[in-house]
Image (tube, rainbow, N blue to C red):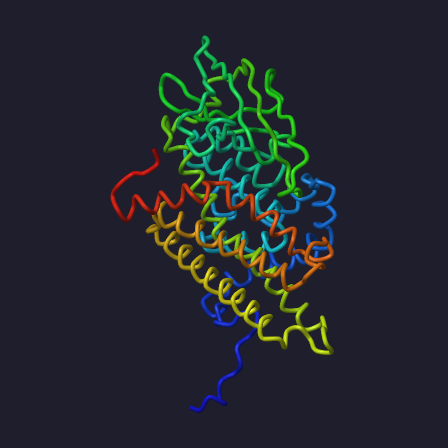
Length: 394
């Protein structure tokens, strides 16, 4: 077979990654992509500019599509594979990191701990409603003074008769001000416990954090708990250690490994299209050597990162994915996605800073993704400990 017998690679799928997906995976991916293209992309720049998100409409739509807690089994959840969940995250973040965060928090940080550590009564009570988008949740772990060291949290809970009293505060909480329920992690004399806290409970408040320059199409809040009284039946019975919240974070980080490549793909494809239309010196800028180098570097990063994400998805579906390998995915894909966004911005020149194109919005969002769900430095040390056997967090 001669070289002329081969089809030229697709600029949007240079390595033919689509061939690695099953029909079912491709159908789910295409369904989410279509929704994002038709319902998110026409509006998300305006949402981002105005610092808002139509959370009730999105919750209902995502619930109808079966995307909330989609990788969980039973209780009204879709029960998809981990790879399918990851592909959905990729397509959602191609729209906006805030949109993916909305779905990720609901499924991986709120529904997952109830599904994993909750009682049967708790699962039956909360999960079906959350899967439909009727109840929106948030995840209260991070505190203002203990971001990368959640084990030093100050929020505490103590028994008071048949109930628990929770006092403390949480910071940088996605969905906090719009949530109907919060999963709050607190120190107790039994260890770190998780509490299902309805947000209308007396003593609970969630002021929204304003003036953000990133993740603007997402609600970020502080949680304040002042003698919040929670009955025993709203305590997650299945865990009493940091294993609880850390396992939730691992679920969310897995989705980010996929999601970051969605943002990167959007930036690359925008730059590629722009390079064919924008002319300088009477020639499309895509014909210039320096521009082609930038486009190739972006394309390679997107293809490589997507392959990595799918590989991690396959391992997770086989039950053979370690937390350190999830750190690998979050670490490498987010840093590469951020570099793709910056490079795409340079291809667009001055147009790259306007919201007419998605590039700067993605770039600003990825600065947050680089930090949340474990900073880039923390994931470096997680992998460093894995390969050397020495813990270097202190």
